[in-house]
Image (cartoon, rainbow, N blue to C red; front, side, top):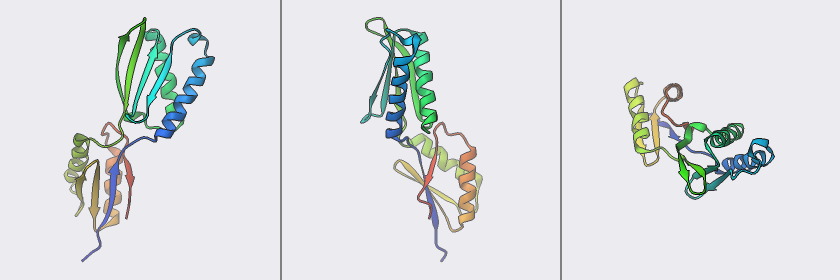
Amino acid sequence: MAQLSSFDVTTGVDLQEVDNAINQADKEIVTRYDFKGSKAKIEFTRADGKLVLIADDDFRMRALFDILQSKLIKRGVPVKNLDVGETKSAGGDTVRKEIGLKMSLDGDTAKKVSATIKEAKLKKVQAAIQGEQVRVSSPSKDDLQLAIALLRSTDFGVELKFGNFR
């Protein structure tokens, strides 16, 4: 019987890189003229994977979000994995925006990944959902490479990571 080869499809962000991007954004906020005397700040709850942006008004909120987003891109953090909330009024004439970090595949995305592989009808390629990841297996490594190319060409709303290829 042929040996089955497989790989895992997951998603996530490097929390240390997010922390570094926030520190860089904080340094830029301190030095920018349009933020002088404002209450703009970024709070990061590492355990929950949440960011909270606080600014004086909508204009500064957009500028703050742009700064953060550019720093995240420079640090290699996938912006697709940000779950950006609405800008809401907060106390003391400020506005706040909550941003969640998608650290793992949710059930719907995992089902979409699995369904995409099954709909492609690749020869003997199987996809199985295992908690927060999808394991794709096949006797042929070439077919697995085709499956990876297929998944990369499809948009699932998050940045997919492929690992544990054996």
